[in-house]
Length: 452
Image (cartoon, rainbow, N blue to C red; front, side, top):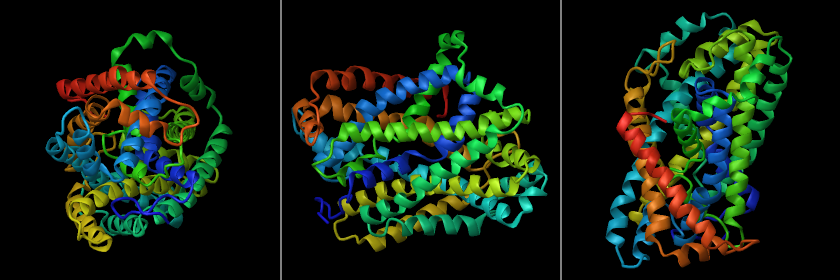
């Protein structure tokens, strides 16, 4: 394999790159966040706005992150330094400093993610044993959701397994996602077909696909959909840069971004096609936050014929989605650490990430009550991430790529390997539309303390 400037590997194929990027984007934001935000934000009206932002952000924001990673040949820290060095004046020192905020964002998300995926793994093991079919979902969830050190064995397994999938860099990431992502889609499609056979699902499909156009006048729905689009595509000024660094110069980054956005959207939709109609069929609330996965769905599974089997399928798919996202966060941070500390080996880097993720994350384990209200350390931690770090990181990234880096440098990289040429219109969309929308989202989040 070819080596990039920081010693990492290139993805062996375009589809390996796409699947790895889809794996990063597909996670709790899709299988948990999207259904419950759609359920609490107007259903199909939210979906229409969300699809608009996904198309826009994928076209300019995501492709720009791929491009800057490939241009610099490295991940978050190196890419910010590169962008600020290659502006109208050399301000590399500023870039080296501000790159740490989105990088810290990736690490803090990873810590919180690992905790909640541990809950999913616990639900999977109880589906395998069959015990999830006999528990009372609310008290069962409370039995570990209110307690620190309640899912330690599952937590350790999630951290170790995910770290093992990045031991060889792009090579092992690509191989893992070539297995996990197809299985993710297959498993959720099986679930969606099963849910379609339930009585009473028609109201769920109506809620999902027939908009109440009056709701488009509600600015809160626009902001919620925009925030979900940013989070779902992992455009946080950090997450996707490192995968761009592992992309061959022969590949079309805009085409890759479009395909990532497409499959990410399909993942969100198949998750919604499972959860929304099921909630309507059983008169359950689809806007329940963590309770959707751990109270609402177990209640539904207990009432379904073959519920245990479908519980295994559901939680296996969610574990795959969670690990693939966590994998990206670890690689983002690990690559940047190796970029800054040249003598740091991948093995030592993996050990450091494991110790930090579990050492802090074990105190994040108490996450929510049966109504989805965030409790314990996890809630304030993830609020810090989604209210402050993610929106600010997205703005810093947008400004760095579209306002600081010379336009000709960004367009040259965008057009490298491209099947069609992109010029002033593409750049103007990024500079005057994408960046402004990122800034609006950031100001709204900070002013109203709204978590995305």
